[in-house]
Amino acid sequence: MTVRSCGILLHVTSLYNRFGIGDLGPGAYRFIDMLVESGQCTWQVLPMNPTDPGHGNSPYHSISAFAGNTMLISPELLAAEGWVSEEETGEVFDETEGYIDFLPVIKYKERLFANAFDRFVRREESIGDFEHFCSQAEWLDNYAVFSVLRKQFPGQSWNQWPAELRDRNPNAISGIKKDYFYEIQKEKFLQYLFYSQWHKLKKYGNRQGIRIFGDIPIYMPYESVDVWTNPEQFKLDDQLKPLGLSGVPPDYFSSTGQLWGHPVYNWKEQQKNRYPWWTRRIELNLEIFDIVRIDHFRGLVGFWEVAPGEKTAQRGKWIDAPADDFLGYLYKRFGCLPIVAEDLGTITPDVNEILRRFSLPGMRVLQFAFGGDFPFSTHLPYLHDKNCLVYTGSHDNNTVPGWYKDEIDDRTKENLHEYLGRSIPENEIHWEMIRMAMMSVANTAIIPLQDLLGLGSEARMNTPGESGGSWKWRMTRNQFTPDIREKLRHMTRTYGRL
View: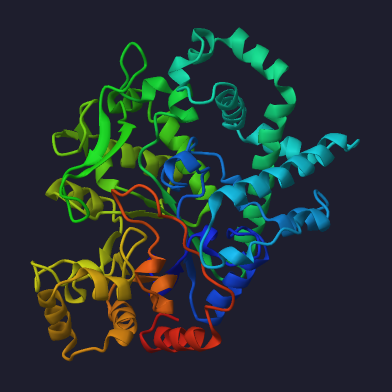
């Protein structure tokens, strides 16, 4: 992140294809080619872990920090690899072009996966790549068992399972592995497919000069294999229930704060044992991404803890975390940490000191620059420094046209126009904000694809604090046109980011 460059933010689910959801197939390869054509060198995605319809299919709520989202497995690549026939991939979701209708997509993919696994089971010869993957992925056994057990106890939290399974009694787990051998093998097989397709895509992108920029949610849900298998790493009571819940106090996005409800970490235990779970997590993410953003980075320095039973995050307390020791250990362990800190929201001097000490780049979001603290907001370009990433908006923001039309007041618009030195027509505001990001001294500029396309609020990816309706947007056929790509390439060259 030390050279002047730029890229595009687009989650894999938002790619266009005929299967109702973006995936790791030909559409992803075409998008990489479009990045190259438009002079970009970075593709930023959201977390790639499994999602859950019960939690709005949010990529920030997953049952595993290590497993991949199997909904991203490409039907076209499955057919090319002989796992399914062309006829079996034939279902088309053109009627949902522009958004994701998750439930039909999930049913379609599950049918496809069943057929693929059936062929896997019937193969007479061993599959060396699969066996090697299973031997290397130390998290895989626990994930597969956990996934199968969740289906055997629908609607129950893992701490409500029979005591021998809740406490992971070795004999009980061995019995599950024997009784549900094929179900467990299927979960492993699907992870093998995901990671095989992902690594091939990343390799292609890297050969084309594209860096893949990933994201790590800081917390894990209570209903995750990570909490089940590592309860000592989290603040739980004797009944294995959370002693404190995660969230943030009232902020830009919510007057009552955000109560995420995940268990917070037992940092004393983590520190005592030299952060084993976090180390494995960072190691995997540095393998599958070239750059990694840690969401809500300030939680590694000090975190907002809310008591169980609270309805909002308003009543909580800040608790220190050992960021200096933790990051120091990671640098010794890995040597180089291509990590970006999501440092939005309430940022205190101790957080800034950690960023400075470890030379970690933070984020600047132009939509935050023109409000009540104008003209002194750190998000204003004249206050940026080289070691940061500038965005027009993030996945949690409205699109630039939606923000300008539907959210901000007249005073904010006046501030924006004063900064630009002229009034801007509404249909040009997205390109002016993109130009502002490109002009910044920040080494890296990242533009959400929705802003490049000039889309309104209907294309917003997520609205924090609201349940339902998020994570559904995807691009339509031929929407990222040659004209837009050429205009982006020209601007990239003009501001020295090519």
